[in-house]
Amino acid sequence: MRTLVIGTGGREHALVLSLSRDPHVTEVHVAPGNPGMEMVATRHDVDPLDGDAVAALASSVGAELVVIGPEAPLVAGVADAVRAAGIACFGPSAAAAHLEGSKAFAKQVMAAAEVPTALAHVCETPEEVADALDAFGPTYVVKDDALAAGKGVVVSDDRQEALDHAAACGRVVIEEFLDGPEVSLFAITDGSTVLPLQPAQDFKRALDDDAGPNTGGMGAYTPLPWAPDDLVADVTRRVLVPTVDEMARRGTPFQGLLYAGLALTRRGVKVVEFNARFGDPETQALLALLDTPLSSLLHGAATGVLADVGLPAWKDASAVTVVIASENYPGTPRTGDVIDGIEVADAIEHVDVIHAGTARDAEGRLVTAGGRVLSVTATGSTLAEARQRAYESVDYIHIRGSHHRTDIALAASGEGE
Image (cartoon, rainbow, N blue to C red; front, side, top):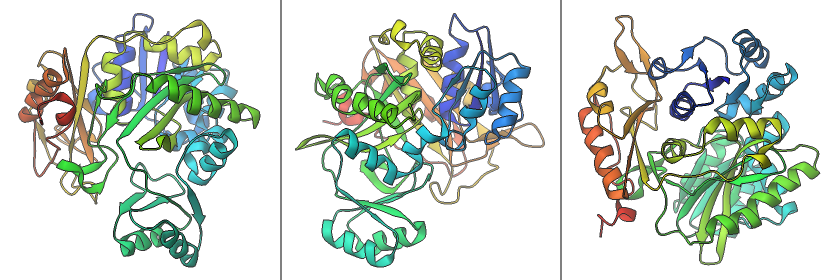
């Protein structure tokens, strides 16, 4: 099978790596990609938001499966254009991707499907915002209604900070605060069959001990030794299947990756948010443990035969991903800094150094080109072993002013006790 992955980040590099190791895949193409993907895929220059251009590229390389990584092309309807060209595409239509494109729409779907989630108000004026904040009280949760690359949410006890964020966004969704640990549970679906992956947990705050501003994600791990045994079955029954069924009922079937961000509250599991694509950096950790060929799952979802594929199998191991970020991330990141040490780090057994915000400068040197630069992913027989390998690799990598969290999976591994 010839495949084409659309995107430039760590999630896409992880997808490319997994497909390149897949016995059913003969060629992997990526557009636009990044320098880290060049050893395992052929890169092409294309505007990922231009559906016609993506469809034309897929046709020209003979792609039998197109995988769209980021949310923006999905919301822009790129999957629709690829399917209109007669090519199998993993990723929801623009109408279905609205589940991520609008927090307010997602709340409507959850209400109709009776999916447990936080109480919320959709606000468009400063007066509505103030009233909603006062109705819920601290801790305040304010979400940009539109796409914001994982950084459109403020969770704060500071009312003024919440007001300022709402003013900067425009239309917002203000929610009650959900206590308890958060879990990411992904499901692959063809619009009818729903196959859940194993749970993962990511770390949104920039600094250790969950301090600092929200980011797109500073690390992740899987599996979760502390998660309830029935978590996947419960969420599949109460959240994933009802949502997919409701989207089908509305005439906008959801085909692709449904990402449920969950809070395990004292009152049970509740949905924090839905995304319409693989999450970053959870995908890096999850794909490192996937034992089922990725192409069979993605192609099965894209062609409506997922029921024939069956539940994915997993390696009996653990995976930890640590993100290395540029100076000043998640603010305006420094770019153009030389990256050293990747070759040594990547050579460590059971480790993949996955590129996200990287580029080549005029002299051909690998340099930073974004906020989250690299995600170092390691596997081990235990979480502690995976952590040790990941951080050993991180220590070999040098970028001026970069930062990373040192506590990814620390508590879950038992080392933090």
